Length: 334
Image (cartoon, rainbow, N blue to C red; front, side):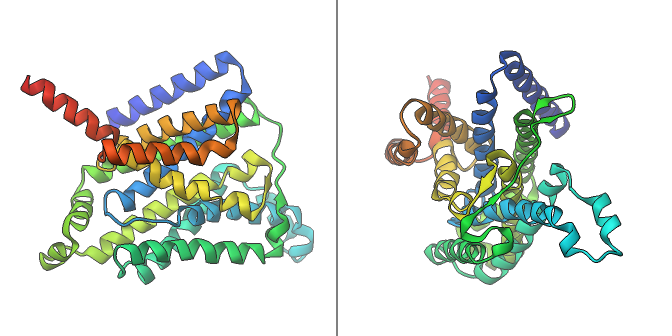
């Protein structure tokens, strides 16, 4: 299927989902759906580096939080323009601020992508568990920095008050849901394009045997840097709307362990070798977590992740995609 047709089908499916939820007219479905869509973006972003290149990233929460605190920083700047800006620049800044949320998403992606570039340059010469530990250390360093940065709230957190409604759409949560839906389309399209391009083949050589790829002249460091930038940027873009979704941000919520765990578990459950794998894993796991949050408690979410991950690692190490391929191959032989 050609990419323009694929994107058109994504848009049609996304529009149908949005219109169905609007017809149901239950804002909770938009709140829960936003979280599931957010995890689709995060798991797809993680898979670009972890699945396609084989470099396990434990720092997903750090890149997500970079997007979160980019929005918090710019929101705080808007709230304190008169104190921060000289009088000569104040009229210009008042004309620019507040920045629309799509711009904040773009800026969050740029900040996270630049940090990903720097981090990749420093750490991608490491391999295996050493790289994974380095990415975890990055998240810890970023959290420590944010905890001690009073301008964005520090350890006490910061309030971000979104408007209650937006023109045409109505409730603000529907606007957030629509933006996250567009991010899903962007991230899934990006993953599919990578998978079918020379870039994807380069990533696959790194995953299969990096030393052999280097010996054959594959520019492995450059490819890994591209993967780190793309992965980090998408995670940052997923995090940028979060303050407007939750209303109050503190370091514990932005750097929550669940983002790192889910970002790894969802692609592994869905399958890491196909663009649809992370999406399938995110929909399955994210939906189960939302049901458990309502019916039992959010405290069992990580238990659900752990049990499913153990089950799939034992019974289906290639995830849902692997099960599908096995089933179809058996049917074709029969």
